[in-house]
Image 1: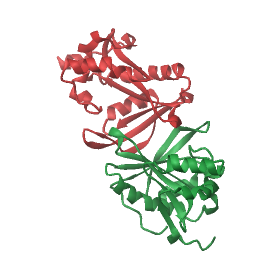
Image 2: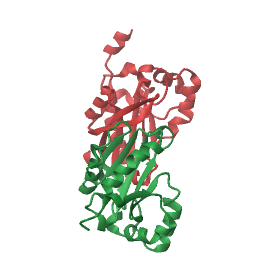
Image 3: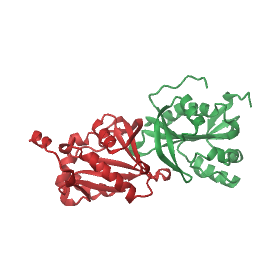
Image 4: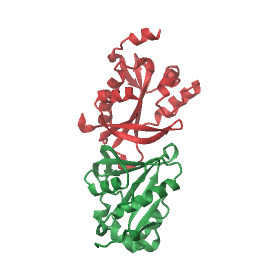
Length: 178
Length: 179
């Protein structure tokens, strides 16, 4: 995959027809280990998850390569008085790691999110301290690391520290040299 | 009158915690109507007794744990813990507190926070983390938490909007394993 063409990476809403591709990465523990998502176990589960969660979601996009789903980017806005902030999350099929695809996806998502969510001032992301690759995605996408929150998250039976990053509506987008 | 009050030191042994009663409303209004106190809070200063009654009857019971801070059994402030709704945050609680301005700078609040930290982890053994968010400009409150043994973890930029303005907040935490 040494000649992966990043111009063929795109973001679009999920479709039911993504189910088989979805299962390939959402069915992989390596991909879901840091997510709240349960690892997807069957085509039926994939269809249900796309129909009931991905499609109605306030802001979720499939990361696509040649229009085939290889991951996701999600933004979950807080509500009421807290709608100035939103949480961004993402994951990518393990076979496609190491090619700056997630960085490209996040860089494409951020300006679109600020356009789509007019009250948004702060986009925040939480990564595991061991997940250096994910931290690099955020740094390359122009997020600022703000600190390490101790025992912040309880996921899949494990209490973990979280590294918190943010991108503000007033921050500058980084130059495009993925 | 103000200067004499400020010179009085407080016997910390006279500090206690209890549930607020309706009969406390006049004492509650002393701090809720004070602009200096409300400055870093999410609410506008109270201007009527009804607002004090509403706080005692409705808001004070919404917390995971919330008690009046009393001096000789008279309320001079309030301290609370809130739990997050998100399942992934169920082992954390957020600390909030407020004290009448006449009682500031006497070591009362850090004494209170130290006691509540112990209560938090003993009464709620599922909790691993107690956190607090303080406005970057609220240096007095940051000192309270540092003196009480909280660790400063970072500044969350434009974390919330208060009275129409976005605010940067310093986040602090203490873990059950820190005690």
